[in-house]
Length: 351
Image (cartoon, rainbow, N blue to C red; front, side, top):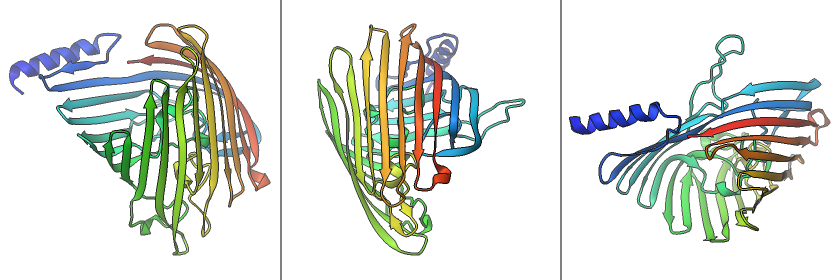
């Protein structure tokens, strides 16, 4: 890059840093662009009941029983994220950072949170290499919610390193293996994913499957197969219906530890269902109702979550919302049973 281009880029970045609506795309040459994005989000959260999530800021597929119960208010901005994308012809590089579930500072002085990688990949024509959402997942099926990710207890939800090939609506990928609750030191074959997505003006529906080799702690090798169907379908006006159904030996790919890959020497089987409906009261005011359940066969556990919210766009880039819901952990072991009510206020500024 010559000095003139360097000066122009530096001036553009300086201008972005000094505007409230920073986001955006800077054209470097006729074929090269760099884009900045993300959002700033603050959550006020209240939890009351028997259990808290094993991560503090949002419900996943497992909760921790609190002796004497929990009655807690928290304020957090850790979901805030920043991303940048560089495009040069057919080549795209993308990286995104946030601060959730990372090494934390203390609540007494700094209240700091370390940045972590969410996505880091390179895409060239039909090939993608790097870390991003698993090919098994349909991101459009996730509910819009104040709780990060909505019904994660029943959703396909993993980011990991992979090699993916895309041809039209078809995708196939080799992804990072991990024998959860087994012996990952013996994982010598990548996980295989395949997905086909039907798309139209009506929305989209994807059909996905996975095949894996799992290694137990006892030294045995097992195969695991699972599948799912998920999508978002437009209904009336701007409303939409979102759903995902997964079944088989999907393990760690669905429910965010609601189901494990292995229970002792056995491969876990599970069924997960998540549904959500979004209704627009006005152009800027909307409500989401959502429900998710995962039931496991070997461990004989159920994880249920449901909620309702109301979001208002104050400006096109600034929204506020309020959500109430419940998380229910029904285990075969009575000592880990419990449920909790939660309410959450969120403010989000999209860059």
